[in-house]
Image 1 (spheres, one colour):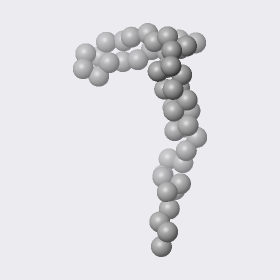
Image 2 (image 1 turned 135 degrees about the vertical axis):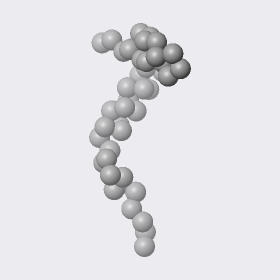
Image 3 (image 1 turned 180 degrees about the vertical axis):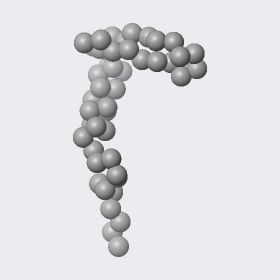
Length: 47
């Protein structure tokens, strides 16, 4: 697996080590966000 990030300021591309803690957490969070509902229906009002 190759993980490439684009830096905000310069637009420069950086390769990340997919075995690093940061990359593992990033991938896990991205997968979690992909599974969550897009319209935010997970957070309903209690009224």
